[in-house]
Image 1: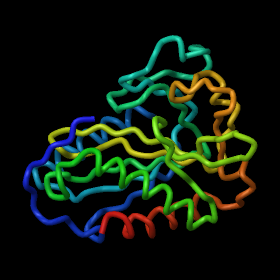
Image 2: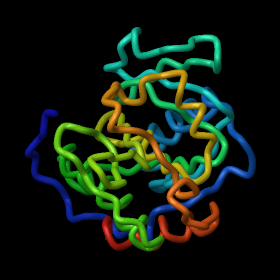
Image 3: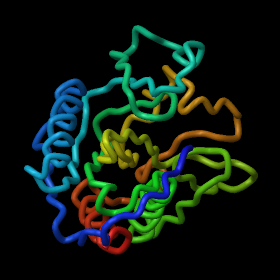
Length: 224
């Protein structure tokens, strides 16, 4: 991942970031068009930065590194090509997606640092819910150790940047149907000791409201 080293203005306060929550399942194409419009407005200075909390109906997305062989069942759910980084992933009910639209022109034009902060945000959010989420070298996303050499992914990260304004973001599995991941090789990881989990699968009773509160509290910790 290329990293720029331009001089930038001091970081913007996290308190100026707007938060919105979609009231119902949101069509993926509508989400992308709304994000693109907001990114353009942020760049012009016409809108505040935004964290947008959504859920989608069941679907698969193909990132810029997606391999056709990793789409195991193309008829199961709609498949959307997307400009974010990464490979195939699943979105659906019970998964909290946070689309993050912030201006790296103001916060620092360092894409590697931004992705690191997204990872740390997820880790801090999970810590609020008594879950030990961890990074793994060579694997995108946040993982939990299930013991006996097994590790499961609990959160995915996919980023796109336009004129140094970010969009797409993170997805935390709260209580989705984990069987829906079976139509793809999630994020290209086929190792039988690596799987996908959720808060519900881990025995954590947090609901979407609990996760949203933890996300907001943790965002201020990481991005202030």
